[in-house]
Length: 236
Image (cartoon, rainbow, N blue to C red; front, side):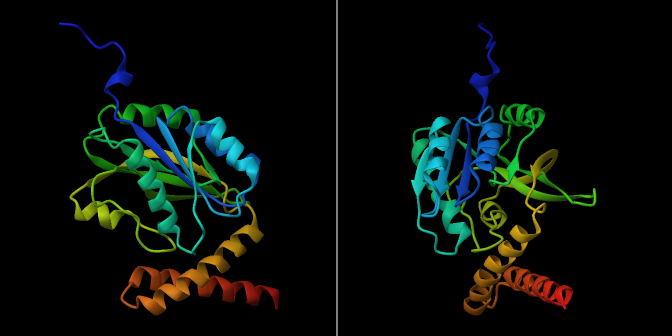
């Protein structure tokens, strides 16, 4: 009996999905460089504001690229990435998807452990921890489903603070919490945080008006309103 000496032959393929707009090229490069050793495939969905330099970087990593007009719906953008992965692996029995944002990156040791995880994922979805350092030296850790099997019925939902858990639960995918961490720099720039909140506030206001039963979006809308109030009070 011949033993398989190369563990990569047993790994489930992992496609990383990325959505991006007009972000700094250096930040996009840092993220892409961190996932390249881990990913078997990278699907990048740009909106119409992304500059040519980002396309050049994505092509350097042999990414599949789509340009999708921004309709103020993050789930829509991410689902375009899922569709790209589905087309790429249409003839493969199982593929996993990881997602990462442009203000995030993986340390090398975490990337190596993710590759090991794909040798026996057991049809589970995995929580990783988003680590966000503050200017005062603190660290906020938030568990998020970051790696999951791309089976029929799995789709992103909700336009802002988009979620994948509901669709995973409907098709019977169980979850597991890991101790793996994704680095996140999104809270370093106060102006960027304020701009994100204003953007999300517009999306969430429309969501709660059209889907009043969505209590998750209602809570996020109230949180965004409170953040805006705190900013105005701080300026008085």
